[in-house]
Image (cartoon, rainbow, N blue to C red; front, side, top):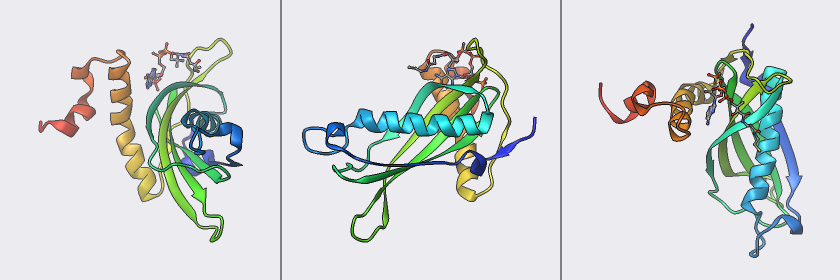
Length: 171
Ligand SMILES: CC(C)(COP(=O)(O)OP(=O)(O)OC[C@H]1O[C@@H](n2cnc3c(N)ncnc32)[C@H](O)[C@@H]1OP(=O)(O)O)[C@@H](O)C(=O)NCCC(=O)NCCS
């Protein structure tokens, strides 16, 4: 199976923040952003695998900046690494300044998707070929994040998370 670049899965979703999507202080409700990111990431995962994909895990979300009512929000999602059947999707979230049109980074998130067949069984997917420096950095760190996610889910023993442990301890 031939590898694919991160660019081939690139997915950009731009939408407004409407009143029904905000919290009591008129900023975008966190769960609404999570759902928007899930949609964008699932499209990126589908573009990479050309398969049915399901969300396996939300690995990291940082709500660094609130997103006010009326904002134009853009989510950029790309597969950052593919394993056997699972893919890490990395997302950058931007808000567009109304007057200057400049994009301001608001949030980042990392989700994991699994490609499955019609019966929901995991299937093999193409490898991810990182090209830019940032893609290479995210690709490298993705293995540690996969191990952390599996350890937290009780699907991997901490002692088997070799690359994750190497972050904290000298060998
Ligand atoms: C995701 C799912 C397909 C995994 O099934 P499973 O029986 O655990 O299958 P496996 O153990 O073979 O794991 C499949 C892959 O998922 C990865 N995976 C499973 N759980 C994971 C987690 N919590 N974090 C990161 N990766 C995970 C495994 O490491 C494996 O990756 P690899 O094949 O690339 O090495 C299954 O748990 C599922 O269908 N979950 C529900 C998905 C869903 O409905 N999402 C929407 C929720 S509303």
